[in-house]
Amino acid sequence: MSSIKKLLISNRGEIALRIIRACRELEIKTVAVYSEADKESLHVKFADEAICIGPAQSKESYLNMSRILSAAEVTNADAIHPGYGFLSENAKFSEIVTSHNMVFVGPSPEMITAMGDKALAKETMKKAGVPIVPGSEGIISKIDDAKKIASEIGYPIIIKATAGGGGRGMRVVTKESDLENAFNSARGEAESSFNNPEVYIEKFIVEPRHIEIQVMGDRFENIIHLGERDCSVQRRHQKLIEESPSPAVDDELREKMGQAAIKGAKSVNYLGAGTVEFLLDKNKNFYFMEMNTRIQVEHPVTEFVTGLDLIKMQIQIAEGEKLSKKKIKTFGHAIEVRINAEDPKNNFRPSPGKITSVHFGGGPGVRVDSHIYSGYSVPPYYDSLIAKIIVHDLDREAAINKMCHTLEECVIEGIATTIPFHRSVMQNDIFKSGKFDTNFIDSLKI
Ligand code: MV4
View 1 (spheres, rainbow, N blue to C red):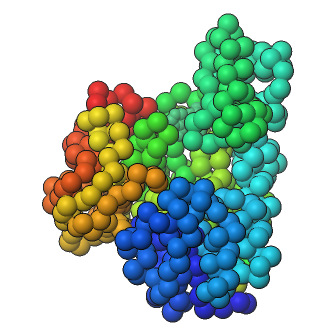
View 2: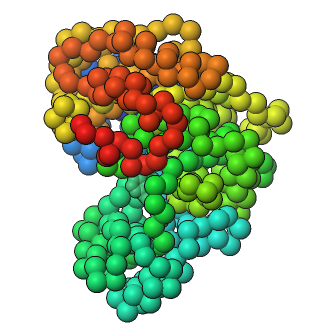
View 3: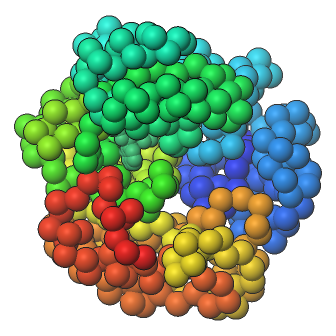
């Protein structure tokens, strides 16, 4: 039972602010770290202490373990929260933080490694009885084996990098004559992206939805699920809009997917916040895809429908607290849109630069998680997320309506943002119908 007194946040932007706010409520002191490009960032101003850890490039700052650890040592921090991205799923970082007698607010190195290898994670989930997509048992390294397994499961198939995620090293193959080229190029891309050429093969699920279950585990073998998030609105593997509940998931399916996620998480003794990602097909079959061992960008939609504070829970679990025995109740419908500094009229090209004025919408059931302000310059070095707008209302229709009005109230001047794109999606008939899949955005003419 360690009680955290001072926590260092090895991240930036809105998530760093989010973690600082949770710490204030828990009466934990905070240390921000920042790169030279982030001197004027809000997380630097809001934290109790702030330490510059190096130049703008992530490798020299937010990804530099020794500089972050030095910052923790000189400030006497007794815990580190990695947020999402950067070092949040780096097994070595988790290990080093712990070996320096600090609490890592995240999973053990073993857990990160086990889930970071996608083929291994799939095997682990299969053994636990979680449904998986039919395919190869583990890695396929020879084209003849690839041909054999592909003809067994039938085309179309998908080749995936075991070190992958985010679409890199992935190839869809519809006929055998394309297999050899795809196999070799997937391995090549996997090698150059992840220093690991290993791939595995699955049946390709056409027009799936991306549904993920939020789970939380404590040190006392309690694992709970907090319902699903539907993240089917994506563009080039970047999520744009997330919501809970999913328009495609009824109570019965939610219970099935929730229990499957719990079973999977229990089988590895999962600790802390995690997300079990599934593909859901047209016939309501669901298949394990990946498990993320971090807090996710879209956690606020789950917070809105459950009334819980997932960041506070993460920290309390890391301190050794037990999960509450109270039954999780969900209420209403929440939608999140990601506001990126990108120009939707220009192929979503990044649009860094100085923000000359900002106004966000507001009102009951509106939440804005953002680190921007008038006069702030969006640096070109990091991901382009500048704000998340999350709304909550009684049902999906009311939530969409509220999001429309909120987006109408929003003004961001000086840079291009994805606000106009979100306004048009909120008015799109397919989006409003709730009947869409992961191809929805790429099928729009934008
Ligand atoms: C799939 C799939 C269809 N069938 N696997 C995309 C990212 C990576 N995490 C896995 N992905 C997919 N795996 C099988 N067997 C379709 C995708 C996919 C996708 C998944 C979720 C959300 C958006 C997507 C966009 C394209 C492809």
